[in-house]
Amino acid sequence: GICPHYSLKFNNDARDPASTLRRFEAFCEEAASLHVREILLVSGSGSRSFDSLACLKALTLPAERRPAIGVAFNPFFPDRAARMRERARLRQKLNTGAVSAIWLQIGSDVLLLREALAFLAELRGVHPALRLYGSVFLPSRKLLAQLKFRPWNGVFLSAEYLSSVEVASTITCRVLDAYATHGVEPLLES
Image 1: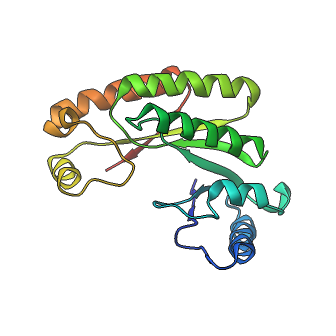
Image 2: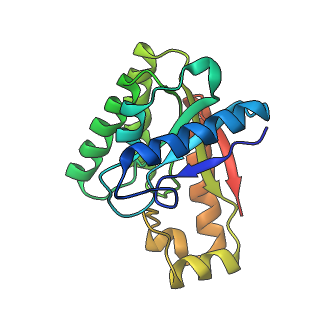
């Protein structure tokens, strides 16, 4: 199925969080009327006071009038403190009761991914219906060249990964193995 992504970065009225929330809830109602089953809510790059966590906390639209909501999670921050903040934010998002899925960011550090998947397994013990999605690139010379020249914000790919299609493919297979072990539905990006 189709899963629309809703970015608060591009739909944010910085002067009026209530207006931003109304806009998101209207989007949810419209999506539900089109039989969309799930949406992905993201803050977008940069910081803002009304981010995805604030939106989930403020949400008033009942679950029966909106699609299920997924949120993003980045297990690949190189800095441990940043990874712990990301985990704490994810727990807060789940504690709103509005989140039904987690979408993992793309990255190449398989050890950090395995640590995060163990953390997510613990969360699934508390939230057994939680769905997990994980993105991977289908490596190509063109894609690797683009990512070297203009890296995506929040995407952590090692120099090793970016060194060749063969190495990137090997790492991608390791990521997919980790996803399979932990029941993560893979999403392929090219």
